[in-house]
Length: 258
Ligand code: 3PY
Ligand code: MG
Image (cartoon, rainbow, N blue to C red; front, side, top):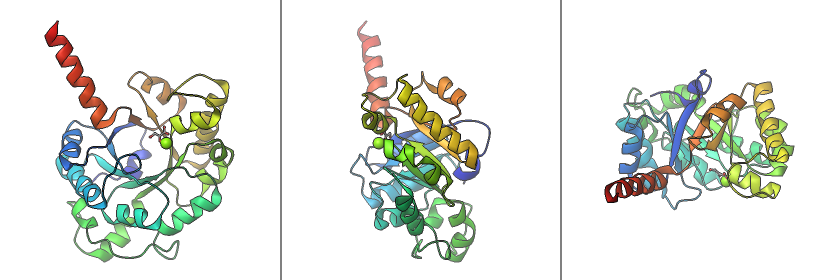
C-alpha cells in the first residue's frame, strides 16, 4: 500500500475527494477513478466505525494499494482516533485543532508508547495492507510509525497558534478547512481574495515550509493551479461522492434533453 506520509513528501500535488455515502461501493468507485487519496468523512456524515473500516479496506483493494484511505474523525475523542487508526487507514484528519494543548492530547492518543498512550489492538489494520503480514507486532513496528496524523487548522485561533500546531513532533501534515476558517474570519464561502484570508493561508504555508510539513486544503477543479502555485501539496476536491454524482447526472440529463 502506498504510504500517504511518503507520498506527501513527493513533489507532485496529491488529489483527493471525500466520501459521504455510507457504502464501501462509493469508496471502490472513487478509488478506481485514480484519486491519490480519499477522505472518509465521519465529521459531517454519519458514518459508523464499521462502515468507515469497510471503506478503508475497499479503497485499498479497489485501487490495488495506490489510493490512500484517510479518515476524518468527528472530534478529538480517543475512541474516534483509536477506531480510525485500528482500521488500518493511511492517516487521520482531525478537525478544529486550535492550540498546543489540543494537538498534544491528539498525539498522545494516536501514538504508541513511549511517544504517546495509544492502546494496542489493531486487529483489522493488517487487512488494509495487502502486502503486510497479520502479525500485530509487525504492524506496530512498521506501519504505525508511518500513519499520517493531520490536524485541521480552520479558525483564527488556530492560525495564531500555527507555529505550535504545525511544528508539533508527530504531526505529519495540516489540512486547512477554508469554509470554517473563513467563517471564523467573518467571510462566507469556500474561497476568496480577502487580505486577511490570504494572509492566514500564507502563514500556515510558511509554517509548513519552516517545519517541512505538508499543507493541504479543500479546493475546486478551477482553483487547483493557484493552490499548487501557493504551495499546497494535497488538495481535496469539493463535492465529494454526492456532489460528483449530482453534477455528472445533471450534466448528462441536461445534454440529453437538449
Ligand atoms: C472546511 O472547509 O471547513 C472543511 O472542513 C473542509 O472539509
Ligand atoms: Mg471544517
